[in-house]
Length: 101
Image 1 (cartoon, rainbow, N blue to C red):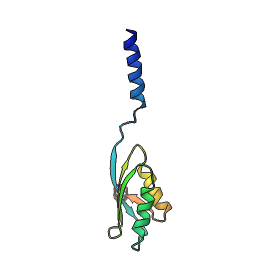
Image 2: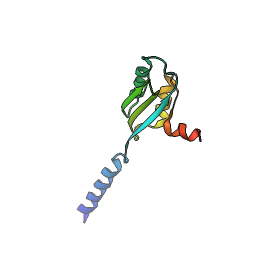
Image 3: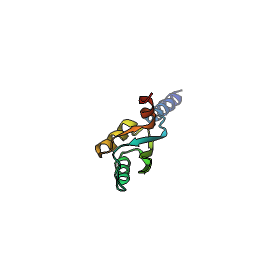
Image 4: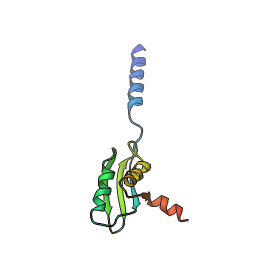
């Protein structure tokens, strides 16, 4: 019986130390102030410098960034703050659409 209690305790400790169910998410951001060919590189650098960002594709033509990130390590607010701090304010497409309604 004691062996089962110890095993249960060890299992509970291991389960509690595992990260929460993190999900990889992809979001599209509308980016302001991009006017030249160098701007997407600056936006991409600001995004990929955030812990948890797996990839960022930035388009000057659409003025958007598509960002894939681990939501256990970062969030949309951190992404938009990073682009804003680099001189390129941004909003998620979902938030921009909701504001226009």
